Image (tube, rainbow, N blue to C red; front, side, top):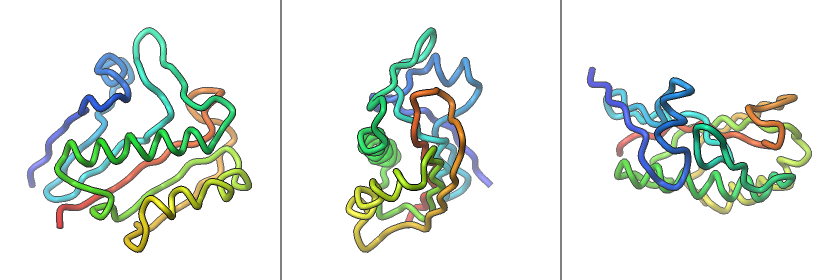
Length: 136
């Protein structure tokens, strides 16, 4: 099986963040792409910039945009997504922004798991999304 690693520059975290935190954004295993958790951040070492402070809606819009760009960097689109795991600090607030996700994916929505959490990587972070996509 072929495995390859990449952290495309798409206006998200910079390369110092991946190196400092010890992870890769995208990992291909044969024809399956695994995307690390996407958060509402840009920058890296020494500081992250958090987008949409206080707004899960703004953070979700930012994450969906970065997800689309990361998929495009790998020659894929939203239609290649097969699974999402969404970590949210408030299920009630998430259900208010779920229509944004439904609209983004339309009739080709991937599977989805919502996990309620008490905190994420940054105290201002409200949501994080991991994704799995396949080449069709």
